[in-house]
Amino acid sequence: MIPDDDEDAGGHTFAYLDEQTKRMVRRAIIKAVCIPGHQVPFGSREMPLPAGWGTGGLQVTASLIGPDDVLKVIDQGTDAATNALSIRAFFRRVAGIATTERTPEASIVQTRHRIPETPLEEHQILVLQVPQPEPLRQLVPREPAARRMHALADYGAMYVKLYEDIARFGRVTLAYDYPVRVNGRYLASPSPIPRFDNPKLHRGRALALFGAGRERRLYAIPPYTRVESLDFEDHPFEVQRWSVGCALCGSRSSYLDEIAGSTRGERVFACSDTDYCGARRASGSNDLAPVEPSAAGRSRISGE
Image 1 (cartoon, one colour):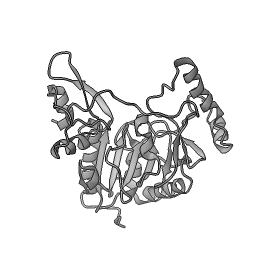
Image 2 (cartoon, helix red, strand yellow):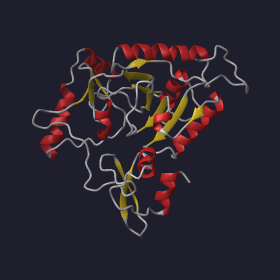
Image 3 (spheres, one colour):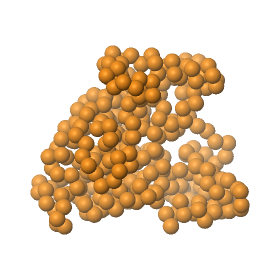
C-alpha cells in the first residue's frame, strides 16, 4: 500500500519520486505487461546517480515499492557491490523500507547483470537495470528503422548476425545480452545478464520489469510467459558450463566468477550469487573441498 501523502517524515517524497511521476511510470508498466517484450516509452526523471548506473531500474522500483516491501539489490550477483550498497541505502533513506540480502525474503529484487540462482516466486518482482533496451541497436543504428522492424516482426538481420558467428567461429559467441523472443512476438534484450540466465526468464513465476532510464524505455516479461533464446535447429541455444565447481560451496549448477586464490597467481571459481553460495555453505551442501580465497576474494564475498 503506497501512502497518498507525498510528504513523508524527513521532508522528502516517499521513495523519492513525486506521485504524479510514479503514476506515469506505473501506467507504462501496465502497458508493458499487456504487451510482453514491447518497449514502452516513459518520461524518465533525473535521479541522484549518473545515467547508465541504474536510473531506469531505480525509477521502476520507486514507482512500485510500498512501506511493507522488502528490497534486495544485487550487482553482478553480489549484495556487496558499490552500486548495490548505494541503491539499498538510498531506498532505506527515502522510503524507510526494510532491505535484505536473502532472495526468498525479498518482495522486490533489483538487479544488474544477474538473475538470482534461487528461483523467484509469484509474489516477487524482478527489476532489471538496462543500459541499452534495443536489441537491434548494433545492427540498425537508426531508431525509426528499428521500430519498423519490430512492427513487422522482421528479425532476419539478427538471425544473420548469429549465423555469421557460427560460420566464422563454429558457435554463437554472445556471452551476455543474448537476444530473446518474448511470447513468440517481440525481440527483446534480456539486459546484460549472461546467457546462462536466459532460461530463468522462460515461464518464470515472478514478474520481470526492465527499466532503461537514459533511453526512456521500459518493458516487461509477465509470469509464465514463453521466452525463447534465438537459435537454429542444428545449433541449439546453450548456456555456459564450467569443468569445475564453486570452490566455496561446491555448486556445479550456478554461474561462476573467477577470483584470486589464497596463493599468489592462483585462480579459483566461486558462485557469482553470493547469497546462494552462502546459503549452500550454511546448509553444508558442499560437494568439494573448500579452497581458501584471497583477501580480495573474501572481501567480495562478505562485503567487508
